[in-house]
Length: 203
Image (cartoon, rainbow, N blue to C red; front, side):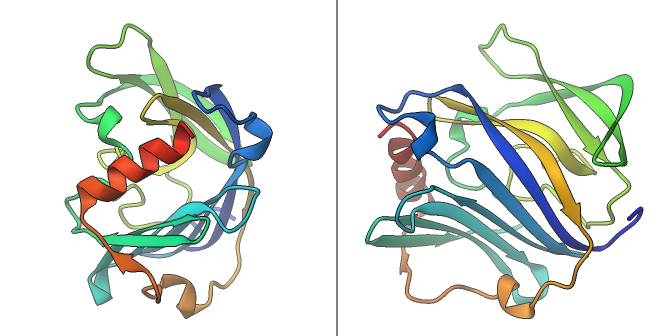
């Protein structure tokens, strides 16, 4: 498993803050990241309908897309290697500092990082590993400065805060189609998709 360059990571989701009128049981409970060297596909699905948020990074094809399924609506926006994925405007200006602490998650050696958000008095921590060989694994996310695969971390989308903890890691072949641009989505700009994602999390 060490230094694997292709596979999938499954994360459990815990809601630290849920501004939605829906119970957490009706919100996304799992995220899956599929990877192959510098190719990354992330899927965050709600347990009802076909709703969810996904992203595809395929540098060779210049694909840095974010997709949103919301019931019968299907939107996407194109990004660049330097962009932050829509939905994360609440995490802009994030600051990191290594703590020196180490742990093991799913059999992988991990390092702890202290995370500070502008205007927040809460100290948060994340864990990442260098034992999984993915090129720039955190592109399009607020953690782009972290050169390692995240194993325990959080996302803040609007007023919603979610904790992601790696539960299972599989070394397996990922089909090419997983990293290809999706079809039949309406193209929108980043600010529009950002507002829709935040509204969805607070529905």
